[in-house]
Image (tube, rainbow, N blue to C red):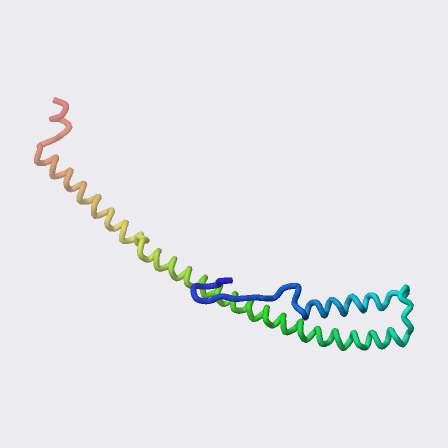
Length: 137
């Protein structure tokens, strides 16, 4: 799985992993050993449970190793997600800096243009000797 531009994570773990199979097998055998219809003697059950205890302990070590692999991959994914988020935020900030208008500067320019336009109208009225009285005649 691609997690960033130049980093990827592979998790080849499946339910067919030998560690999972061994753990499930041992749990299933333990469940069957408690069934009274099998007519196992007390000594046989004790020996079976002793062996299953050892096997489950070994399976637990393998399962812990698999969890460590998954945890390591999750940590790398989380770090990449954090880096990607920081890069996105930085790019958005830079973009906003490039295209955003400063409100104070924009208001000042608008007032300047408005004053120039009013001055132009005043000059035009004076030059043309325009007035309401002359217009109404």
